Amino acid sequence: MAATLLPTLSPPVSRAAAFLLLRAPPKPLRTHHHLFRSLLSSASSPSTPATLRSLAPMASAATPDRRDLLMLGIETSCDDTAAAVVRGDGEILSQVVSSQADLLVKYGGVAPKMAEEAHSLAIDQVVQKALDDAHVSESDLSAVAVTVGPGLSLCLRVGVHKARTIAKAFGLPIVGVHHMEAHALVSRLVNKGLDFPFLALLISGGHNLLILAHNLGDYVQLGTTVDDAIGEAYDKSARWLGLDIRKGGGPALEELALEGDPNAIKFRVPMRQHKDCNFSYAGLKTQVRLAIESRNLRCTDGIPISSATAEDRQLRADIAASFQRVAVLHLEERCQRAVEWALKMKPSINNFVVSGGVASNQYVRTRLNYIAEKNGLQLVSPPPSLCTDNGVMIAWTGIEHFVAGRFDDPPAADEPDDMQYDLRPRWPLGEEYSEGRSVSRSMKTARIHPSLTSMIQGSLHK
Ligand code: KG4
Ligand code: ZN
Image (cartoon, rainbow, N blue to C red):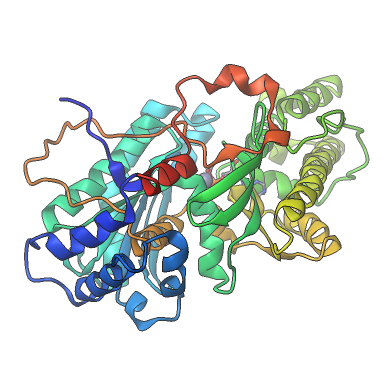
């Protein structure tokens, strides 16, 4: 079967209006489709060129039309199977997450084949529960949003397949979502006054991004990691320290760090000689491992912290606290520089968004709030349940793009089940800011997708 595109993020906005105006609905149009038909057709009439900017006023969360929009969001890019139903005005009707904690404990990380299997086993139930909890059925939906990248192809495929199956059966448009954009944009659901432009730090298990968000779908990457993300460093350190990681390595380490002395061990702060906004956590990870080994702690022999002596526990807590202090100090230093760069480019910036799984860490939030305040910015950080992977952020990002007219037609009725989807496992959010370019990463740019921002800009200029 030939590869087909999932062109969600490439069609010009006028295509969206054409879709809603011309398509013969598979069954009587639902009320909200009528509302969106008129909304989009007026937005893209010849006298008002349909740009993101011209659509922005209509995207205001308070308009009654938006409330009638009902989006199902599906997320399977990594190890959580998640779904949610969200109204166009941001009301969360349901949120379901099934995580693969047991697999993480067993394999010490995400094993793609196992993760795919776990997603396949969970996806139907997770989506059904999201619909049931929201007291809606598929036929009430306006569209389906699903993560198409970045992430593990095998895992992404499970979510995309489910989304397309529903969309095909019920004649629903599909919005393909960028996972990291969703981490950033969910802050606009939480904080309705959060307008573009803003600065965002996105910190998770696989990503460490500093971005300047100019507008919806228009991002400049100020910094990224040259090796590991901070979440990976938390997860591995927690494992090596023998912590109970069933609820995640990050939360376990954060908890133990409360008992430790953050100045006990002098770990080196990464990349101080590089005057940019990039990150590196591989070296800090190694420093933690060496600290554990040199102190003869029995955790690497499989002795869990629950069986450790009081003295051993204290040492492990000191390592945890010292690691956390330096890991977050590295964030602080890069964020301070990024704030300076961002304000130079966009003096109107008022907000500093911090999101992604690691942003649920209280110490991280407190330290970054200090950076924000020092620079006269407001820190916006979603509640922990919306920082870690979830379906709400996918549904909400789907809503933002749907309103801007970017979505795919419903799949053809004869679309085969073994279709090869256009998945984007390595998909940057935006182009790199020139001062932030990292030479050491040039080796890793092979087989990378064009960035979300360049795809959208390319479609607008067609
Ligand atoms: O965003 P997320 O749920 O998934 C990815 O996109 O990767 O982030 C997961 C990461 C994991 O590394 C997890 O350990 C970390 O976020 N994390 C934390 C905390 N809660 C989750 N790290 C530090 N402290 C926490 N409280
Ligand atoms: Zn994530």
